[in-house]
Image (cartoon, rainbow, N blue to C red; front, side):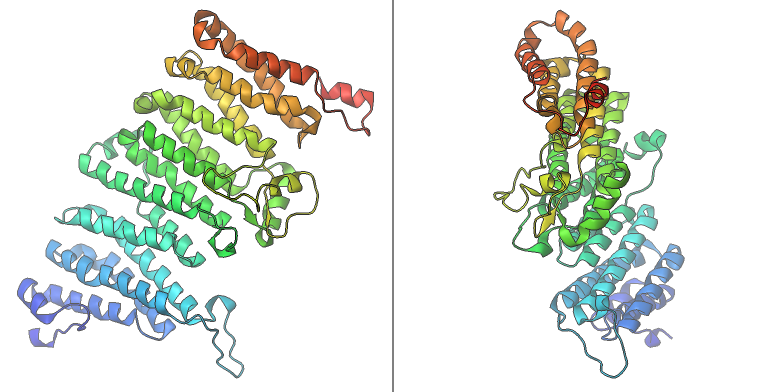
Length: 480
């Protein structure tokens, strides 16, 4: 019977398997290896059914295998399969298929490359699921850190690839490998140095994806990441942060701030904008990306205020500064920090808010609700931390007044009247909390008074005038 167990020549050698594994486990390896071979069959239907069978079998029956067999599954089946599928997908033809007759092919599968992309999604998702469900078992392997690093490399390469379907699936695979843990369990989950290092490697990959995907080339529309992709990327951060919290320091917060700022500045392609603009202008709702971004900041905020966030307390001003940069979007277009040319996106925001024709290529989602929510969060955070040394020394009080000065000076020229009303309410709230602190720390607040004076002057003697269509009664109600 031993002689009847064979393996594909491109996958697992007979000599290696015969010398190292018992017969029973060689039978399983033979099954896995031949299924993997069928996953690169020229026929898409065969690849799909083989992939589904392979990963469901590994997940259902993998627990009966020994560690040595799992070593072979990982390095002789799963990773070689990932590599081969990626290579075949990359080299596949992009020419449209014409089968003739009455056979119709959906546009999402009308080229060989698109069909291979489906296989790549299936394989990458399947391998990620194996690592998610069998992580504790795999961690007993001596070279698990190397396997983990390689899996993250495949996820990173998939996320930054040119195929939208594969990119989004790569992020979903990223989410798949992150364990879902409750708040009260996060200390236990992060105690081990090895596990913390594992999640820090994942954080570095997240940061790399965020940095690379926001390097925009406006001459190439395919290089602009979709809102769905960016939303999925940001949604990964909260559960990831709970895992890296013990080693997440001020420099990491600075990196996160840059990525979130760049992500918010990514324009929406005009052909995909209708749903977002209609959604946000109908009832002042946030886009999914905006919600995910503020949720990520909210997680950091709550953790920093708790005893578990001590390593970020000195960096709290960075968090408030990030929220203030978001608040500027109510009056100005968000601008990329790294893009050398903003010719295509510098006017798209104003065109949408003013109701004029959108530019040919890009339009912006309405940022007013997002910016106003950011103002509320920044003020709320300051109210809780106004007497913290880091907040006092970093002149956060002055920074908030400087940010509020913009809508206060624009007043009626703001895209939304609610913006300057919120600004004056926020200013009064900040003054009620900040002035008592300023009396105790006069030196640290010296730069604030000129800024406050200018803000009040520009608001009270604003150069903007009410719309001619408004009556005196309506103007009076607007100031109440």
